Length: 108
Image (cartoon, rainbow, N blue to C red; front, side, top):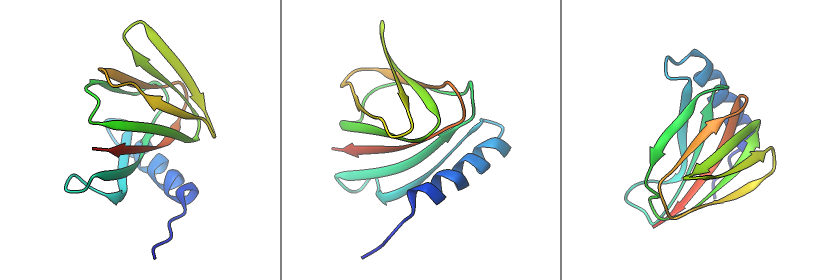
C-alpha cells in the first residue's frame, strides 16, 4: 500500500507553479495514460488557466486549496477548498481565481 499526503503535494505543486513560466505544475499521483484510472494534482497560479479542452472520460475535480472556476460554454461553476466538481462530458476550461491546487480524477 502507498500513502500520499495530498496536502503536502498540493503545497509542493503550488511552489513549483509559482516559479514556472506557465504558472502551473502537475504530478500524477496514481495511474497514468496506460490505466483506466488516473489521479493528478494540478496547481495554477492566480489568473492562470487550463485552456479549453475535451473531456478525456468521466472526471471529477476536488479543490485541495484555493479557488477556481470550471467553465463549459455559457455555464460556469466556482469551487473552493473542499469542493468537488463533476467535469462535464464536453469541452471545458479551468481558471484559477486565486492560487489553486486540485486533484483531477479521470476514469476512461
